[in-house]
Length: 189
Image 1 (cartoon, rainbow, N blue to C red):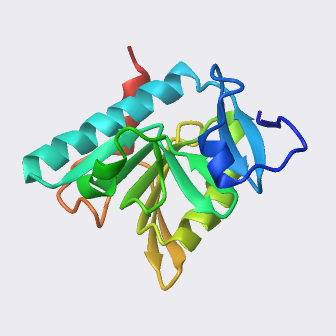
Image 2 (cartoon, one colour):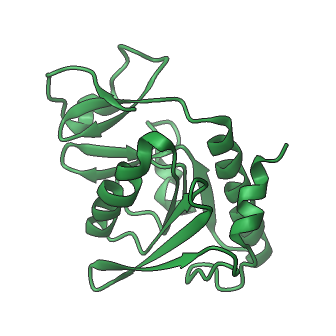
């Protein structure tokens, strides 16, 4: 469950410098700080697995990309989201290494792992914000439904394909061999 913390409206710059509550994570939504609950261990393990798999493919193909976990993405004038995993070109962050980990440019791909409190946020709000930002590919990994939805941007809207057992088809990683079962097995420790 997310909760809005105050009635004060924050600018994006104020959000980047917000230090009043360093023990919590916030998204900026319409200028309001929304407290993000800590993810479940299932959520953490799945995101970590996906990040590692993307790193393997990046290294195998020797691409100038980075898979980043829990980084921010500016999605509007007074909006910033925290993604579970996203993919960027190295040059997108090279000049910002000592600044807040929030992208002001579009990542190549975003992955969100659905939790009970993030269903509407991941399937609806982030979907429309990421499409408006022009993010070419968006994965919604849903452990509750045991499915992965891959959304590919086409003329400003996402076309979706749902994967339940067959290998994922990713335009960004055409040779990736990964199934939903492998992703959801990441929680088995």
